[in-house]
Amino acid sequence: MAQAECITTAIRELMSRGRPPKSTSPVRLGYIEFVVALAGNVPHPVYADVDSEDLDARGDHLEKVFAALHVYLTAIIADTAHNIPGGTLDCRYLDNLFQDLSADALAMVRNAAEEMREHENWRAS
Picture (cartoon, rainbow, N blue to C red):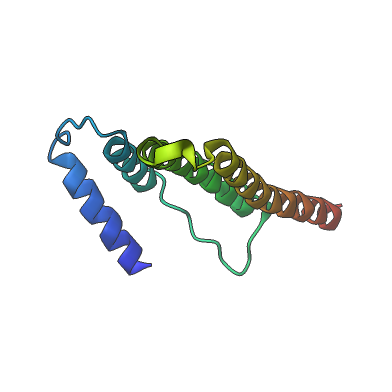
């Protein structure tokens, strides 16, 4: 955890030095936005005595990470497809794969939180 805090501190220090140089590269801009989104969305730890609120917070964190990653991946894939002759890269297929992966991952966390909430409510009554 200390290493993650150190990395986060280093990123924030770099960000505080001013705006990055303007770039015409959508990939570079997507990368910068992705790093900034990650730096501003540090995950809260989940401990052994996890409750539904911890899982909800983890789901919120993952949702933001997936959204930022989607923007970045879209820029990379579009740029790559633009530079491959013959259009052999199926952008929609790759986008659909990412959408499925992120939706499934979020659903697992959200479902676990809901099950835990039901268990907490059952124990409280």
